[in-house]
Length: 281
Image (cartoon, rainbow, N blue to C red; front, side):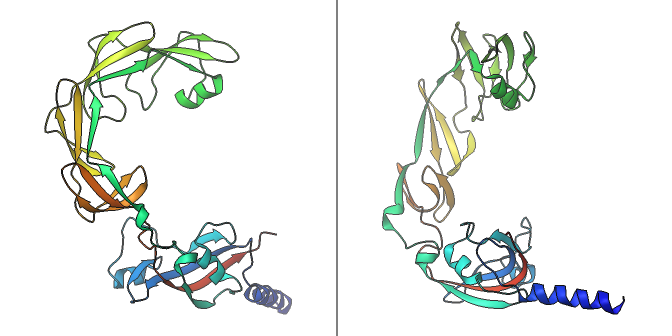
């Protein structure tokens, strides 16, 4: 390498090293996050994860990449990287206000432990979509009288008519056929078909175990209803209509769930190392 090339390389390196983070920059950082008592709650550094016994083999350990000022990370994290230069290390302390918020007792919610589902389920026999919606749903352009087999529906559809605004297709189903209805884990039998709708009789078995957003559940059946009874454990993380939460209490009828973020109300301490800046000017 000649002297001019070396000089130019030095100029490029010096320029890169002298750049500091500003709003709008795309950056990459290594980080480890701890609570005030020293407990680690997250890191993207594989050696740290292993030494702290929080290693997850299903996770990729690589620098965190985000655009500063776009709200892609908590505000305190964004504030902490402003002004950093490539190769610089920093320790930042983030209050709950600029982290995951204060702990809110109102976000401890009560959920029904048992769901009651009607054993009879109905679907529309015909589906009307725009040509674009049809192509998005069926992954093909509509053709008159062609039969389509959608990925997430266990029965087929036949195109009955097509115009510029709509495509009408009809479920190809017969009385007596059995299917697993989308979102269920049991057989349902077609018991009647009219011009407008198809009626199913859902037929799970009492004692059958299924997975739900609240974890494992047990199914019981009577003449009219399917009762799905969730069986979570204390401190188990579950999904609810309020978002993810931790089970705090439960009884025969209710589940008490804390849907506060697990770091709500906590002061967070991050150890950062900036490894890349890309100016988005």
